[in-house]
Length: 307
Ligand code: SF4
Ligand code: SF4
Image (cartoon, rainbow, N blue to C red; front, side, top):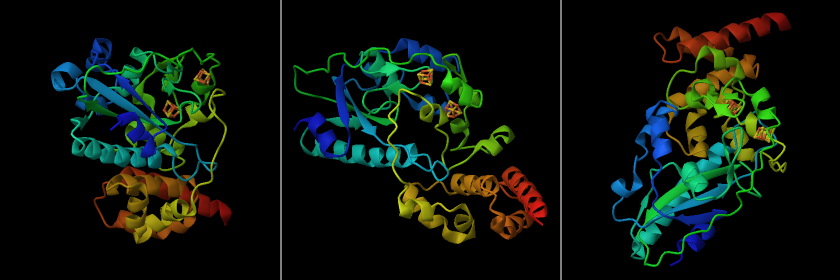
């Protein structure tokens, strides 16, 4: 069984076989607080964490951005589909007698260290022809020797430091430096959305402005599927249709979706959400208090201006 061919058969655009190499610089940066807490679960040294493995396969799931950026960041459904595809691949490899385990390693750093793809000023990994519109999944493998590692390629510098990503960002990007504390995506999964980001949320699991303005990225957009659009109507979600949204997004993160739906009602000026929002606030001690206060204030103001 060829693991790279298996990735392609399961929807990945590309896959690369890399050596189990250390990444001390990444670990030092992580330990210095350079990354979001999501990085805490990644392994310091892959040789220690996976002593049985002799290769790491990193697979690229490519996606096209949606033509309507007010519904959901296209990255999110793509990453969900890629996650499930890689779960399937790991199972198939194991069934074929190839030891395989999902890798908890910094994929982008590993690829750049192996000379595959290139890093842009928006800190994202770029690989032609997909640009930065990709999601990475990785798996540790025990392959028969000798292992055919992917040679360095497609790593010519692409970023021309035009500064467009810096200008459109809320403050996380600064001349090729990235501070996760100022990136809205750091706050969409686990915690209340900080007040300074509330007006900036335009879609579920947004933002990808720094990618959309990049002149080096492909400009082929696809329509939001009808089922996705209908399931992610924020007012319908608040009025009891949350299960459909969870199903479409492939997540069980109820609180995060409700929290984002409240903010999106406000930012999309959905005054028809006001009765529901008021009911939610009157129900008492809400985990969404700051988002409800924000949305109700904005929508009441909107309504009085319309009158
Ligand atoms: S927008 Fe300009 S500076 Fe930013 S990553 Fe793209 S090419 Fe580089
Ligand atoms: S995702 Fe948004 S907030 Fe984060 S770096 Fe890009 S433009 Fe800035």
